[in-house]
Image 1: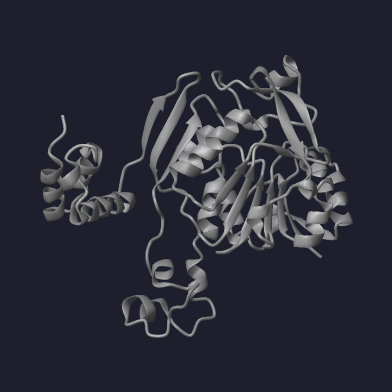
Image 2: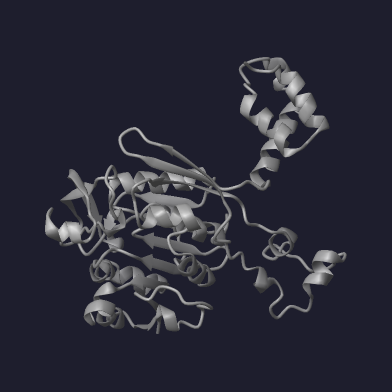
Length: 365
């Protein structure tokens, strides 16, 4: 049963608290009592309640659902905090935070350094949908709000508002969401995920968080343009979907079981060279940062992106397990051919804390 829209809106107008607004937003049906609910004042009250609830404190909640496989919907996540560049506001500035945020603020602000960015807490609540039986990325996002919070902080320090970023091997968005929030509305994130069910969750997580600066692509990037028939993840079983491979995919049996891979049939997966992609949304803008996490396919990604690397010269943050566990120099050699120098992520000067022990940060020479 719905309370009359006019009475709920009147209460919300007088008592703009979270509980009243929650009842209003939950119960109001704009198809009922249309004349009252669509008045200018009442629409304003409703929008005000939505904004109040968007920033109001909320305990983290986990709901279980799913039709074909179990899912978790995690809401109210405020961790990890997004690095918004607040420290940049005062580094080398003639002003102090106290003068600008607590005083009149005359001369403090411009288009990039605004009062909201530098003075207010900008950490919004985050929501995610994750595979309930994913014991790696899904489990981490449920508990920490990211796959690897320190690695996310590291990436956020390597970009700034307005930057354009590629997330190659985006999985379900554990990094894409936080990086997109860091680069802000004037920035862009292009996220690539080859496996359909994971791509759908990636896109859902972008939408759940109301993020408008992310483009998602259901494809792998490699060194040729082709389609491969690949096993796809079975999210109805306890598994590690993030270990799914495009190149040299382990067959079902002991090899797959050792990686906690669970398969459910085959699907065609598109593979494209980055050099061969038309990306009209860039409109000539430079890509400044590329994250690569593609399960032993990083060399092929770079080989298919040689022209792109010459044109854009981005920082490249790449997982390279073959080097750290097997000593392979193939990725480092390929980056050197493109005039890049790489340093272990743990040794990178832009990492204030320990980060990913299996990755390199590569900068153009």
